[in-house]
Amino acid sequence: MLSSPIYPLSNPKGVKLECEMCQKTAYVMCSQCRVTYYCDVAHQEADWNGIHEKICQLLIPIRTAPTFLSSAKERKHNEEQLIQRQKHLINLTRTVAQKLLFEGKHEEAIPGALQSLRFAAAVYGSISAEQVPSQLLLAEASIGLGRLDEAEEYLSQAQWTVMRTTECVNAIQYKLYRNLGLLYTAKCDNEKALWYFADDIYHATQVFSASDIHTAGGYFHMANVFYRMKKMDIADSLYSEVTNIWNTFLGELVEMEIQKTLWKAGISSPEPGTTVVELEDVFDEAQEAEAVQILHAVFDLRNQAYLPKQGKIGKIALTLAMLYYLFLDFRKRTEFDTLATTRDTWTTHGEISNNF
Image (cartoon, rainbow, N blue to C red; front, side, top):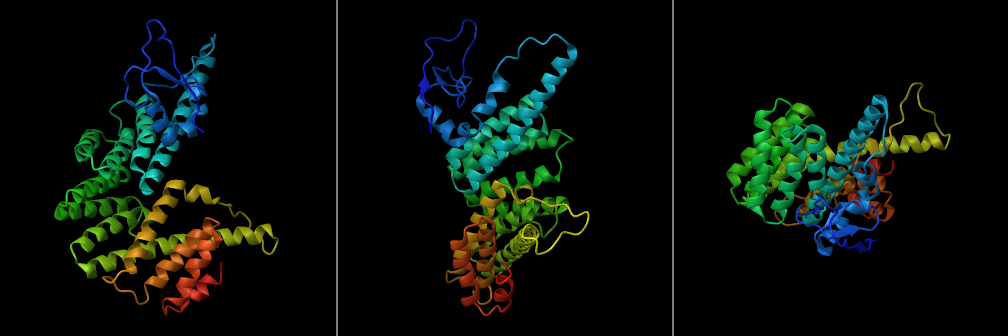
């Protein structure tokens, strides 16, 4: 629940309080953390809904002046703790912003993206490659809102950083090219969009593999362009590749969760030296939201008249069933599992489904 605002009567002498959202002079303070300020209640509400609710209390030790530390050792320890807290917030705010983008909540994603950009600049410097992922989140949010000029501005900043720093590797570059592809898709420039998505796929493959979920996003967006161009054979092939990648990935996670259940029930035991991996360590909230977005989009497209269905709706339905098994949403899991075994004659669906 949004905290009640506190209206400072005046800013402390010699201190300018800035709005968290727009950096204008602030007159409203968050009553819970008391270290965050806004120009008005509207910006407070936007920040709360986007990210502040999740990081409100985490900001207190970062923005509160430390007590007097007499020794150099204590000061160094305090500085190290501050950096670790800021790095945690970079990861948290980016994950939240990316999740919101996958859910189509572009306006709500902006506060988290802005916070991640500020913390990245504080920890790594104003021209570090670590700022690029946050700039790309802001670009993607702007594209989703139709603010293409703003998106180009963020992408130009990201490109400039990529060109002038040696830190920028394929793991960052593929995201840059994906966003450039999305920009030109929004501009209806299909040829440029396809060119950038091809670069996205190439760089993602260099870091991960051609069959990794990080690469699947590039295939998906490229398929969407071909679909709009009415090149259905190519679009169909790419959507099938996306389905296969997610099917394999989720199948492995389902198998992992089943094994853990059997171990906990005492039905079987892990091999000596086996490391138990938690689901959240290999499948974060942003990836979950991406899976929902992509797999439902492919499923809906398969149900239209323009793409081949035979043998393909069943597989995407099974993939969604596995996704909802991992989410512990057994109603949806059963719904899609039933579709997987009844809509197609892909016989292995039932065999796989019965295992989870």
